[in-house]
Length: 191
Image (cartoon, rainbow, N blue to C red):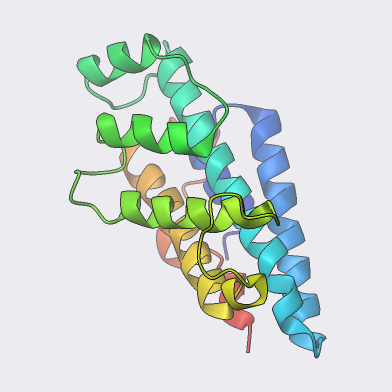
């Protein structure tokens, strides 16, 4: 059975970012294991969602740098997409990564729902700022962080990684080519 690391090998350009991402996924697995045993399960939802979004952010960041820097192994993007990304400053913000991917249709056509799903999750992730300066709803955080959001955010991570594995894999010599049907989904263990 493949593990999360196996899928990361398919898409990650930078070894340390990959290791850090796998480490954070392991934290999610431990949080879910603890949540299952806890009578305060809902208290685990926020950190799980925040970590899932941090992983998504790192994966998109790494992917954009791979497109920008890979010269020998290449990435199967069009020459125009590659030139545009090479001339783009890659900032440190998930919203910017989403905008770059959408503008260049790197995660599928504009009609793909993946962009709107990422956008919605950015709003949730930004609620790490307790003061809620942008007045996102709901105002009460205890109503924001739900099991449903854990599932949808986990599924978003899965869908992004699987898409990148199919569309933009690194050369086979760098990975074990895991079966995409077995992507780990520990969030489904939540009762």
